[in-house]
Amino acid sequence: MATCRKEKRAVPFIITSCVREVERRGISEVGIYRVSGAGPDVQRLKKAYENNPYEAEQLLKECDIHSVAGTLKLYLRDLPESLFTSQVYQQLFDAYSSGAGNSNDPNEAAESKKHAYLNRFSKIPQSPNQACI
Image (tube, rainbow, N blue to C red; front, side):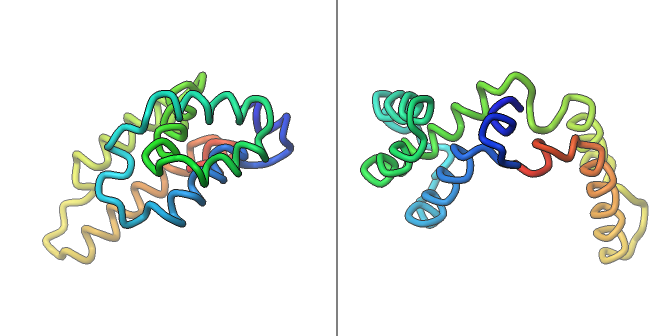
């Protein structure tokens, strides 16, 4: 991800600051990533992050929390490639659909599913994809 190289960070600042703000004042908000934020606020935050990320972080505190979450969603949606690459996404979906085990023991089945997920997750490019996830 070009942003990571430019900022010399494993996770882009926009992700870190938006997630931090959502955790600070939006974690108990019902539908935090489902409810849309105000379009003008989302666009204003997006522009602020492009021009002066640290000033944008101050602007986060003034915006509705749904606009903060909306800015994060917009950034992730606009990435040239999904964090979960197409190939790995399909493998994760297949692991979920298959139940990842045929055991009658629920603990064993859960452990088998966890192992299958971690195995697929390890195939995602480590930086920046895994770091952002």
